[in-house]
Image 1 (cartoon, rainbow, N blue to C red):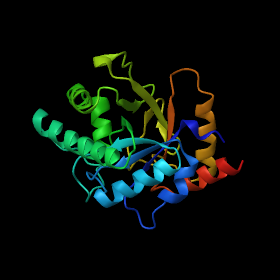
Image 2: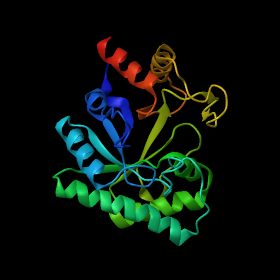
Image 3: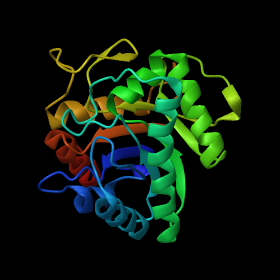
Length: 224
């Protein structure tokens, strides 16, 4: 398996934690910044594990809603949304610097990710955060859904999901039948299909660490 394309959401304080097991199998770690999960201790711990495994580090901000794991959209005005994302990303960047690690990209989590894809004002707010924190940060976006061009000079990483069900190029909403793939063989097959996808740009393929079938799929790919 070439792990160079694989990203995974980590530092989410899951019990048991999959972080140490998963990190050697991936190339990009999206680390929870305290919105849907995580705290300073978990962030620093996960940053260190990523660094030990030469894994690129990304900030994984979300709506502040640990009860719903950041999967419920919140209605915030522009300033509130900016403050929410900026404080998570800037604080996480400081923790990276304090541990001699580099923050390379942002990948919003859950409902914030979907709102970014559907609502131009949310996307614009995240652009503003990137400008304020570090204009060189890349932004992970859903592949094939829309043409981002070169908006605001932000560099994009186009992402698909190995463990999510699709309707065309769009993921099925969570809660719908087939929205989350729960069979490791199916996830491996979808990952392999995306490796040969030519109709739209794919830079990275996501596996979710809170999906046991995804972790099993990663192990199978690693041992193949």
